[in-house]
Image (tube, rainbow, N blue to C red; front, side, top):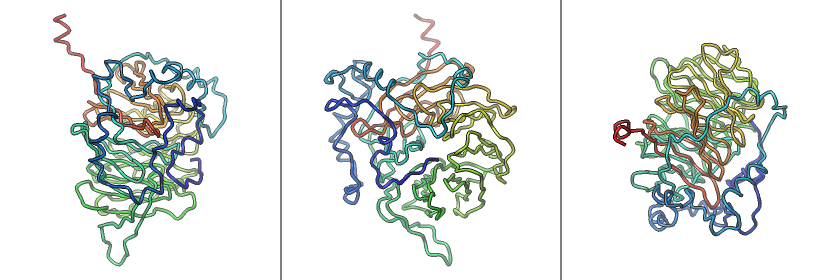
Length: 451
């Protein structure tokens, strides 16, 4: 992936995306963002601040139905309308590319998706927690473990948001020195501090975070402190691009990391012993393991994607079709379909029974596809662009019917709740950074027969 020196946590995306300048009335400017110098004085007890800010920062479904912008942007007080700002963004936004190639043939490959469907309704938006991003190409920084429990990265803290209590709480602070609780005979425990978290995953009660300098942090949510932490590599270009938590074929829980040093590493999630390491020809930006634990998708600084044996790392298939580097992947729960997100602004679907060509190509509206998630019931596929657009695709329609969620701001991550009843979107913006919640719409056939 693209390497650059990141000396602070100040929204690195600003350097890579051209957005319109509306001078003093720009709704996406803010002088109140948290600076690195303030980190040492950062109070980890947020509850008092939450209660004080709640009335002015939250937006409910009722308020949205009554005309309030779901992000709380006061368009009526600005010198331009929402539609005008959208029009300007679409014209001026420049998608980041590593490989400059003609896209004429790509446009022909993309299938038409019928937009305008509503699978998920807006439920709630809070600015009491807001995501931050440390690398503009990495957007796996938000995870929902239930429809009431969401974890996101905010500066040097991993925050837990309860959508039921409407309250946030810090569960991990990486600004201060971290000492692991797991002791290993004969070895001094490593210590990490001021970790810039670039990616994270939360599953099976386990929080795993990867750092900008190649760090790996593992914490069971019901344990005090951090269970395990290490610096995976001393390579100069060591950023941890992705982490995954999965079960191997025998059912054992594993942690997998993908790094810029072109290696994939596997750890036992019980004692965090290093089990295996696979090397490839290019920086690995993302990995995902199939539901049965047998197949491994490997994506990175190549237009090709790989399928490998998850136990040995041996490549078995080469997926060809993307025009640029890939940063996201997800498996359908039935294990037959793999979705890959790419900087060429498309998501490709691959049928594992025939990988000679992609099954379908879905195009984004404005930029790269940086996050890809299937709902656990397999009904929906969510695709997030770097900014402004999240797409929800109905898999049962053959991927031809979709909902487009139109918002403003950099997207730090998307996550369905495990029961697929909620979809959460993390927005990283100086002023309007927030957590958006959408709830699944259900069609009641009984009521339909009455009216």
